[in-house]
Image (cartoon, rainbow, N blue to C red; front, side, top):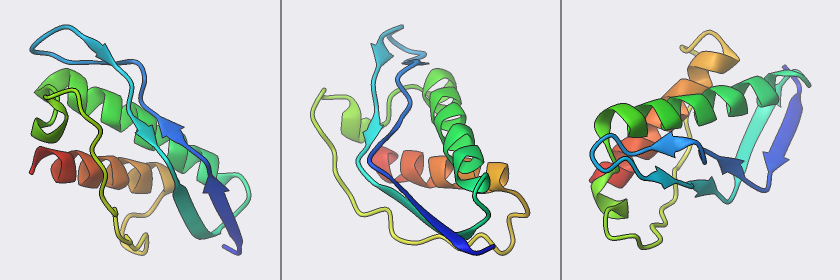
Length: 103
């Protein structure tokens, strides 16, 4: 692992709120990953998008987004050491984001 990747945005725009049936767009302004092989950040991003869409579809819209306003927070840092794969890291990031938005 030796590369860095920064995306201007990650999206979960195919998410459908289970309670209302509404399709919504969730945009992450910045996702920065350090210490990955060149192909791994895209795998993280794909897993993050899929997991966010799944969580919103199954659990509904997080409380902080239910008023159709923008929600912002610093997601902090997660360590990938114990997660084993880029896909598991992407899923963990998505669960962290969902939990923050549900607070």
